[in-house]
Length: 525
Image: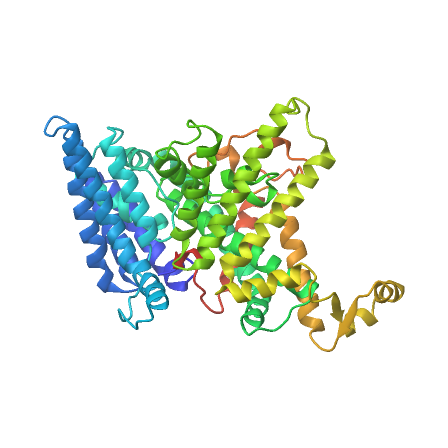
């Protein structure tokens, strides 16, 4: 079941919420049981067969967590073996469902054989479930968390707002909230906050992201068919996908946070205007924040982090991002995307070392320098997204060649004819024309330019709702407040009639845009 569907918005969510609020007044444990049943129904809506997989995974990981939690029963070595076995089984399930076909295809190419595993349907949320439960096992091993009731653990794993595509949560973050229960004094506040955040997320997905997709998909399809793309067409498609992906995933995260808040639960923050970043390190602090946290805490730091010298630090960064890319999808384009960001991070950290050596860190960067840093970072991210979106290397290279200007600079003839003297100047500079496609070209940039301005200059959902602590783990970094190109707008939500009208407006526009239900992009990961 999708958040952006009539079944969810008008049936599942209100009925689940109503049942929860009524049951919670009588029994906290029964309300948890109700949420587990509702969440399993939510998950099984897509394919009931995979309910067996998620239930088996929960039982197995609960058992391993219980074994790891009994510190006095096992030696340290035995506990390490238990942890290793638990992680291995989780990764084995992920490897089979997500990577087995990819692995066999590459073996077939190398050896020339034609082995076929048949069709393996990727279960929804298996990547997020795997990381979440691995984090639980590691935290249980470290003594950070301990679970005694399977029902509580089941809700931690299956809680439907974050079940399908995150954010990736920690047991210690969620269990205290589940056990506390909704305060009768805050029910109206939680509902108003949650509905507002959910409505904003729905608007992002259904109105902004899905319309941006209309101008990204044709360009990537043309590249896949081998069609050469000129400079403006290639950049239009790449930027359209850049905005589609952001508003799609941040919209989902808003809907997850808003949906959870209606039940009195705060989920971790997952986005904080990543396209405002002025370097790639800051980008990863702002983009998919819970994944970045997982990769840092459970991969980068165990590899040695930055404590083994600069060379091994760069190795650890590269390996972390390489595996992070592979986590996103079973394809070499995802591996290249991860490797590319690994190189970006290495260059970023090496540059900071050079600046430190030159004693240049103490001087504050000028507005011009920040703007240049932002532009370099943004272009680097857009280039990465080309590999992330492309179905193969050849189509990615076609788009990148167009973006680099290798196929020339052209505008639709109808557009050029309306530019007057500017058109004459552009012709003198070597800009050519082509017939047809004028409407598509104009509409692409009429969407891309405003969406880019919104993503870069406007406050995000968390900033708008900041007076009411909309999520856990708020973003606290200096660049959050002193970014040189961010507009300062008086958009602070409060429970007033004006904001109620705003919520009704964006929610209605979001619902009216649901002419066809489209999956969230991160569902495939």
